[in-house]
Length: 205
Ligand SMILES: Cc1cc2nc3c(=O)[nH]c(=O)nc-3n(C[C@H](O)[C@H](O)[C@H](O)COP(=O)(O)O)c2cc1C
Image (cartoon, rainbow, N blue to C red; front, side, top):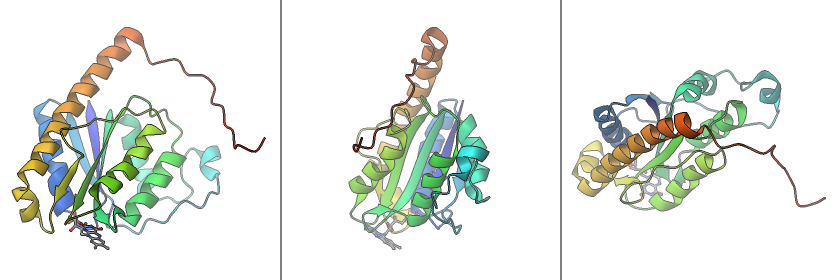
């Protein structure tokens, strides 16, 4: 069992990484393999709605999105971490997630998702809500914690002093591990829920 953790901060080992590491450490202690992938330092362009991915099964821009796609396909859980920028996720991360979720053809349902946000002071819950929407449109159950998953800080040292924030990360790791293990058992016993062919309406006709 494996969880992929995405660090959307431009900084490899700062506040967001500190929070993600606390989740990863807890997951590892629960017997779940982890990998933190740093994407926030790359120039990641946005989706251009070319739909080439619907034919090719991958994004037309061959960058970190296509590199991470097979890791996403294989993992049992995905944690997306971001610094809060103007009460929203980092722009690079949004470009990355739009293209990753849109271009990948595999079934994401029952992979467990979680968002982790890091802010100096404000905008955490708005950013948390924004990220959770990627999971809930593709059938990914969201692991929750004892509070909305955020840490506060301008430096990693600040984050390490945010005891409630770090505890929230550890609780998230434990809950996520439990959900992943439970889903694995459930899949064996009951199989995945049956899916109807998707109906798409645009409110016009
Ligand atoms: C462009 C920009 C916008 C920011 N906007 C916010 C904000 O809305 N609220 C906040 O509390 N901190 C804001 N910050 C501070 C970062 O979110 C905060 O320091 C975060 O913990 C940095 O995480 P990192 O070290 O992993 O990059 C902003 C920082 C930058 C560079």
